[in-house]
Image (tube, rainbow, N blue to C red; front, side, top):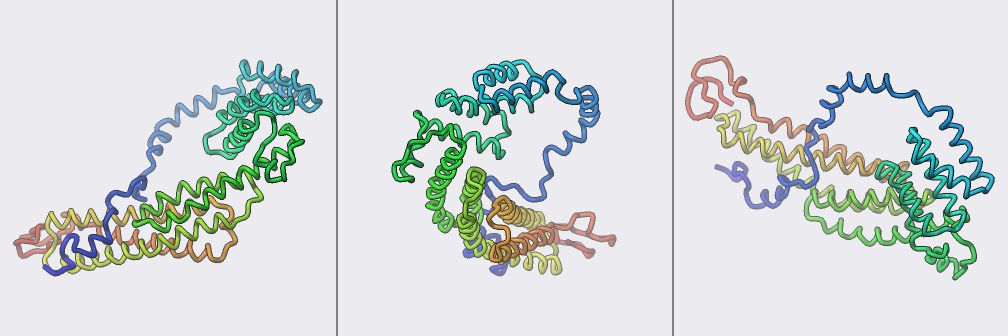
Length: 356
């Protein structure tokens, strides 16, 4: 058997190492686990929608307006009292979340720093984890936790020691958020070299995805953030992913050519069928790697309207499509496709009929 026909010859083994254990990456062809559940609960969902109240009751809406009016007028004690009672007894989750937000803001305005910190953490937990509201409320809570006297010292230091204003001032709070994001960005930037040292495409993804999510959160906290960090992260990941992915693509293309030749000459036995399925799984996993990279790139706003980013995207698109086609090509023929003439032998060892 020639070198191309061996299962994992020397250089090819090194190239394909790790593809079968793609930690955290599922083949792109996997169906969503929720599709069946949604389809099977249509009747229950329709019944729930029909019996659920149309919206907040008039009484709840009036109380919510009273809370907001108390806060706007500066009567923070009244706003806190009404809002806490409302959160305990109301039915409308959206209005309860608004009330909890006014509790947190009122306690911050009253300079009750410890209570405000707890209120913002409680508010954070009312939002979906990872949502923009969750991230912002959590950031405010962290700033307050680091400011027991209402002075955010990293910001005061950055301003030359000026600390006269406290965090009850909304503008100062926004400055503190930007300061928090800048300090986090410096730590994130230090982790970019780890991506350059990745040895496989899967390692690139494992190191890039958490970093990309952290950078996305930085922009939520600091909307005016420069796109330079987002672009640097994407470029670093793409420049490391491309050669690793291209090398694997070449190796898998070589295997595809070998099996095509074997099919024409003498068919494929059960052992070779297992090998083909193995290489097909590798292709699907590599396509999923490229898809995950593109998805993470989409979440980084700073990569839009970036010509170089468009080039990197096109390269990843091209590799993903190539892996999808290879996965199809490496699908072993079914036994039913052997042909209709007599003497068929799907193992390719005997018989005069068509073989696969």
